[in-house]
Amino acid sequence: MTHVLIVGSGPTGLTLAIELARRGVDLRIVEKSPVHPEGVRGKGLQPRTLEVFHDMGVIDEIMATGAAYPPLRSYKDGR
Image 1 (cartoon, one colour):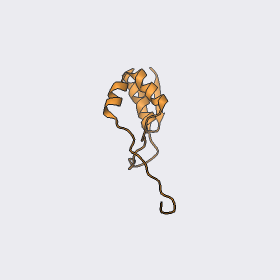
Image 2 (cartoon, helix red, strand yellow):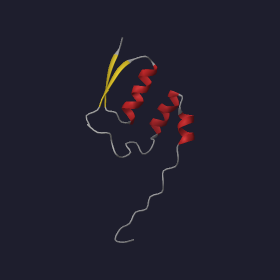
Image 3 (cartoon, rainbow, N blue to C red):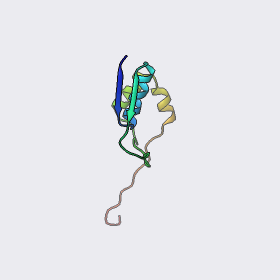
């Protein structure tokens, strides 16, 4: 049996863990941070991520539950 160590529990590590678990691979996830993150670790989806989700067969659900990134406004010198 294959044993896999995944270093990091961010979006990439957890997605890898899900795919390996779906295939029956024995795995362990390690994370160096002693606390859960307080902020968002994955604010947007990159094109390659969308391709991976398509290959995983979950792209339709992801796209149906997502939303457009909120507009941003920048100020400089009070304007």
